[in-house]
Length: 374
Image 1 (cartoon, rainbow, N blue to C red):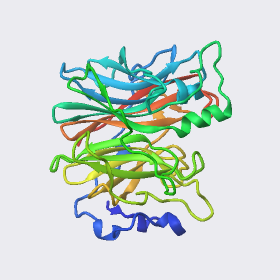
Image 2 (tube, rainbow, N blue to C red; image 1 turned 120 degrees about the vertical axis):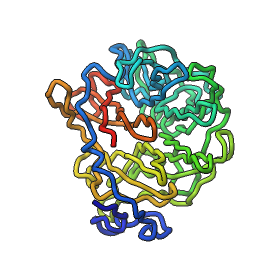
Image 3 (spheres, rainbow, N blue to C red; image 1 turned 90 degrees about the vertical axis):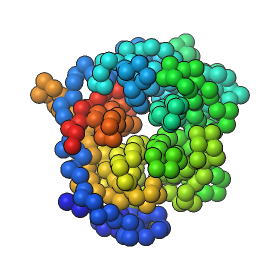
């Protein structure tokens, strides 16, 4: 099994292009791993994190100083609709004795703090990592100038929803302990750039630490014009958590769209350091890359900028095998996250939901799939 570059990819036009920098020269001589999807084990039905009174979304798990597993996740009350994540989400912490869970709610970690802050009205999609003796809780947040929706008045106008969405910015909170307190940044980690590919927002941060240099690699999502595809990913680096995050490229690091189809794109990366290179799993929105809409792809990079597809590119599927032998196809499988222990991925987490069709949910929760270790 061999790795392949984007230039080997079969799509035509710009889909066969990636960031300039000589991807063909970046191929590693290391052997490619077993197809990531083949590492997925049956999922426990009582695993992960649920709360029937809340919509539960994007999770991130870390082993705390107490030896327990702490999940940082998004939640918002079912008194308002699922689409109100953009206005009502907050980041919470839940805990379990084991990686698989079930996780029990503990506290709200990043509550609303006022419209004068860039992330003062909503916090969402957290990513927790350990950096030296600090816990870093990346997330995105927004602010808006209308009342937060409530059970009595749950609806927003289209203009209000779009206003909140366009104010999404990557934020950071830092703590000495997984239990807090958390010092929240006063400014976004990285802002949009008018006139560039990332002119609209910055959101869905994916951090990793290079153990050789101590530098932080941070990938983020944006687009040229709001919700209009393609959604694109950029990459930044910083010497320290509070340091300036500098873009490593003026252009996005993945391009799959063609002249005829701008909906071939990816989002929601999870990045980790795999010994001598970076690897990532990423959601394939259209399914044109891995063969399944909303499935995942597995990629690698020598430097965090030049990314390549693995030959066996599929990382995960929405068709879930449970421990009792049953199978279900999840409405969505979002915000993939890997728990890394002793340098190896051991559990895959994702936000999933039940409902009659895409984005029409009755319940959502964070599920977990144990992985075979090599």
